[in-house]
Image (tube, rainbow, N blue to C red; front, side):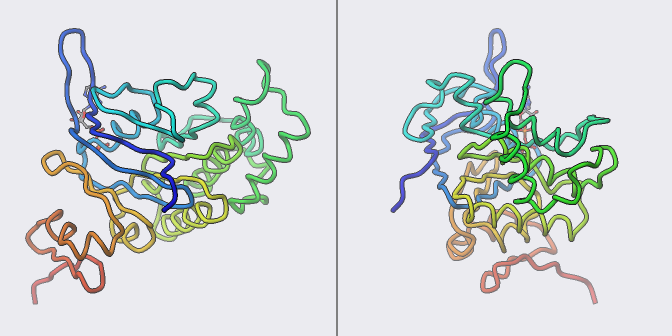
Amino acid sequence: MAEPTIEIRSLTTGYRGKNNVTVVARDISARLFGGELTCLLGPNGAGKSTLLRTLSAFLPPVSGDITVMGRNLRDYTDKELSKLIGVVLTEKTDLRNMSVEDLVGLGRSPYTGFWGTLQEHDRLIVENAIAMVGITGLRDRMIQTLSDGERQKVMIAKALAQETPVIFLDEPTAFLDYPSKVEIMQLLHRLSRTTGKTIFMSTHDLDMALQIADTIWLMDREKGVSTGTPRELADKGTLARFFVRKGISFDSENCMFRIERSE
Ligand code: ADP
């Protein structure tokens, strides 16, 4: 079996205050692989953003180890990290009067000098990133004129221009209409295959994730993190146990949730 890109051992995430530690999630052990799309699912407050922040080294672990490409995450310098992990956040960017091409070009900042001047080589990488997400026709548009789905593709292109083996995305399908959600999920899945990158995203789009993700991480404050392919999690009963709500049942054979309705 291939070596994991990221290996997490007995990780506890949380926030350190002056005199106390607020633990968010305990004892997470899991692995992420290159060439795969992994979706992180769980209710609000389960700790998905905290986990993404910890895995991208914005937040130190409370305890446990995170190994990325064979080396402990804490041993990387900030400069090395910027060439290792690309992060796509969902907060709506308030970038105005910047073209798509210029924003994608910001993805090159780990490689350019202080002034961020792009060389010919960087321009080619930016052009390629724009083509990979299928937005060549938008390259000269100003960011504020784009739809939410188009803007999300630009942010993904920026992460591609950063040329990192790992990309994390915090709810990239939030705020999008259904066709745009599907398009972004399919794009990320295709990119995982064509680039061999390790792509890890949080989402609330459960049914879509079950259809397209290679691996699912289910996160819950009480039950911790359970990982597996959608089929494995269906067969083990993990999915059925995870979302126990009146009026919703899990159809294990078809790996989907069914909504009951009154006659
Ligand atoms: P999710 O992304 O799954 O909705 P979060 O990771 O945002 O969950 O939050 C998990 C828990 O961590 C919540 O109880 C939240 O209040 C807490 N939390 C988030 N940010 C901080 C912070 N900066 N300091 C302390 N606690 C925080």
